[in-house]
Length: 404
Image (cartoon, rainbow, N blue to C red; front, top):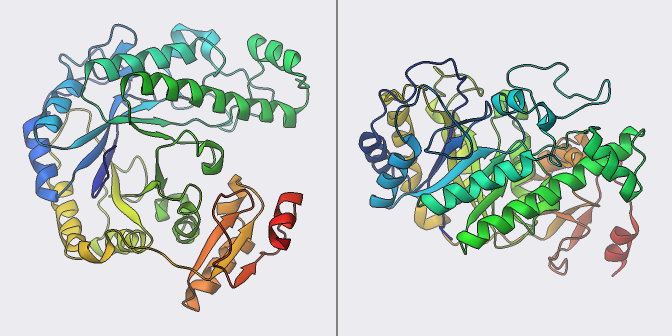
């Protein structure tokens, strides 16, 4: 599996009515710019949120304005220039495919749709419908026909579906399909089953793939993810306390797994014209490097394929500064004599005020610490102090480990 040094991540979600898709894209220029920046890895869209494919597909819906194999041409250039390529597919959201197949869309109980209303972005899918086999077929098609190193599967959230298929499966497995809590637990299990199927399909074709499932909490897919990509745009809702929490936590979920630190070249997703301050980008990426997280900058691919020279210049400026210090970061270890203990992985871990407060306190005191879960495989023998943040539930497993 490729070990990333410097990465870029491209989002591209283009409505079918958008004209001139890929018209001005020059893959030779694009990959030359990647090399100039020192980039050795990119994640690039093969299929987007809208359900459009950007390669020659016999299974999906190729964007009607795209007149050639955009993804394929890029893949050829990346292979020629030694740049690892991970194919991005949205595995949980589609517009056009759910218009053609309404039975693939999530059917929500009233009040449980996290988007509030149906929008062009927010047509979520049912993981137990034929959408599952459709996406897996597209993944196998890409893995078989293009020199990709793996896949980034996005938006795998727990959409609480009560379609006839899900209700039938809930009845069979003993879930109460009228209880929202049980529906959400069934949805969580459905996501994990979906990830298992994708992982098995990919590994049939790529023996040692880069594979990341974005959506489930990290600890629940540690047997499926082969790398982690920590998405954190501090100015876009994550805040400046998110990265410190995740940096001290992720390295202990599955020790030895490579970690990427994905910030953004802009201030928020959708900010096509935005360009973040150089020092702001350096702050995020240097912080990640200190904690063993390789730099990865997210951005948008313009539907026409515009050159975006200013973006590449900004990335080059930042990455060239980081690269001066590579010898200090590569193969560094992160000894800690303090552990903040949490009972199990959930979404609250990264937003829980007592956890964030404890992280801030320990950082300001310049203490070396980890965040560990009760079920992590890592020994706690190295720690001289265990901290349990306020409001943490003492489960039996956690109590047993503390007393051990």
